[in-house]
Image (tube, rainbow, N blue to C red; front, side):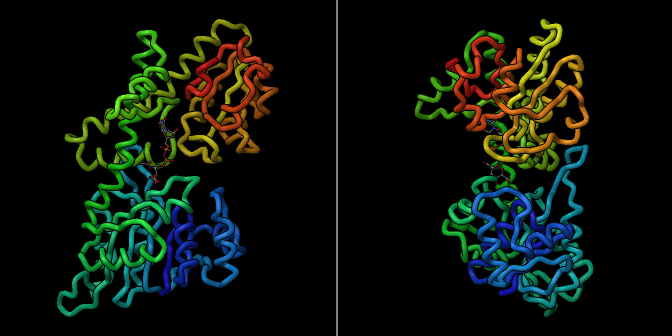
Length: 415
Ligand code: SAJ
């Protein structure tokens, strides 16, 4: 069948590629001409293990091509961003734009699947937006009008493991009608080897949001414990390790804050849908958002004891062993240190990038350096990301014993 995947980002491109290698005829649609050109050359514009080979193969075999224009298709998969605005409510403008582009291509009989993480009601909203301009179609055959099937199938893959998790993770599918749900399940069954339970669209929407909120609330618990431990003088890492020996306790790890574009965003969609009720979810977000500021205060307190402090900041990514700096607490911490300590020198070590992000590159006292050089020159070593290269570095060679070490990940805790 002919599938159009709308949005060729971290989710859309892997989905397009995997469908193309499982028998579908796929057109990937994107508004960015550079992305479209890259995919048509068989290239991937971002880092994701094993995706490059699959895209190159699918393009070479003419199962996958990219386009700026929405084609006719039997199935449309919407995988566009759903960011939040300043008031924390979801910005659905990309979903609306996708609906507007799909609507003229429909003849009846198509399946439209929303994959973007969305607040409850968004799948229904997408369908209504299409039907508002296509009154000749219906969701259920009412008045003898041709049917379009509309369903939600949220992505739930972990960046860095996308090509594995697309195949091995269970998927949840929610249809606006039971028929739409079952049809979407058949589509995902072509490449997903795990189970695909079918529910209604609003339940599927909330399921995805709840998964990421579960993680956020549990990380907030760990971050609150770290704060409590600072006050009472206990090592939080040892505390968690010991508590986790209980068969029904499994506490996550504290850190410098929660980053990425999912866990730090999705809980707000629940809060926006039920502001009175979602008390704990909101509080967890606030707890996690307060962590970077505390890390900055700790470093500033150490720096204030020195006349010309030199700081080595290790890591800018939002989690280990990836190049993704989006919503990264490490990046936020370094930017804030640069502002509060204009007399300090800050050497950033980030093996996954070759140039500092725009807000840091303009600061004359911030530089991108190699690990050994930065640590050798530093008074204060701030570990922000547990990249393997940092965790496994020879700490006696780095001479860490003579430095002030602020280890936000507990990666060097036996120091
Ligand atoms: N973090 C901690 N402590 C922990 C675990 C994570 O501080 O114990 C931090 C990380 O350092 C990072 C942030 O949380 O800054 C998020 O990282 P993550 O690895 O927990 O999750 P993401 O954002 O890479 O991917 C999540 C996944 N969701 C869940 O595990 C429930 C993934 O399956 C989703 O597909 C993805 O969000 C998404 O796209 O929604």
